[in-house]
Length: 490
Image (tube, rainbow, N blue to C red; front, side, top):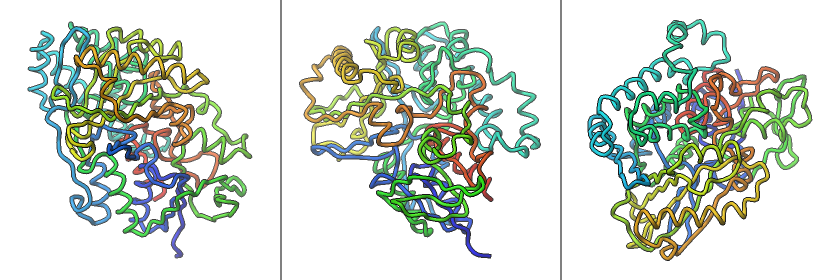
């Protein structure tokens, strides 16, 4: 039989992982990317002697990356290496509390007890509940398609369905956390995990309390070479398997014949395929690439609420701060007000929670001597036409005032290099509708079931991977979407 040809639209991490899996199975795979580099949101840049990972900065579940090398018969460590973090993140509260989130669960429980007075047993109970939710949901809801009959005929699925009440889907994350912890600082600590998929802890189901298990059980890691080394190593692996990457190759249309995907159009040329996989945001896949077929649009899915976005300041800082770690969080004093501004008012609260990533803590050459590279991010609403120039200017002032106050240093005077990424840029650079980071939000209990499937129900030979489809956004879930697509194609 002739080798089947697969065309993948978009060289994000899910698209590359899909290419690797299908190449291992013997398919001929070509990847078409509009930018002149691979990675989607996971890319890097340099400015004035500082290197920045522009997008995702937290690395968990490295086994999903290693698995791709193993499938290809390669030794992962020949391509990609990483080290486990002792402290996952350092948290700063407005009352002066500093909390180290140790990877070791016993150490973290003791730290939380010492800093907040919260009983260690409460921490352990939450971690046990998180592990329980993971055990119920992982193999059924994350590693398989929810849109295939065979998933529901599997014994694991049946067992998980009977345990459905245990995933706590009918109250919010905040309600669940507040009921367990006496100390508001611990409630806020665990509420924060909703932001890992761009959701609101006051609306998202407590099922999302599964997320801490990924970080506090499996741990967090720093890739040698920085986050972009994940991407560069996978591209190298894909190319060694015969995958061909086409950069500066904007896909203009998906060509259909009798509701079957037959080709893509690039620079006016039709490129035929047996199978097409879109790693492009699902909204743009339909509205840009299938615009001539609106009758085939899944209108209800495309109307779903989008996840939050981000405003990021990339600052070169002319000083090193011993009190800061690789990952740092400076909490808002009023978390509820912050999320109300993001989700109801669609603007930025005057006291936002600030995430600060400093890769030069682990990779010294990411900054000049005696300097640090600050990836400074806050959660913001998706782009619906706000006056972003005004919002950015005010947010910058508020962030600098907050960091300067807590760190006891005028940070503004230390900035010697600056770049900014806002929701408009995220949308234009990565084709993420409204600049949302994770596709649709998870602000209701049925969100996991309502994400777009990994295969079109209306168009034959058309598949989807990436953060805007099942099972969701973030590096681990994007890699799982590639696995689901590969298994479905066969």
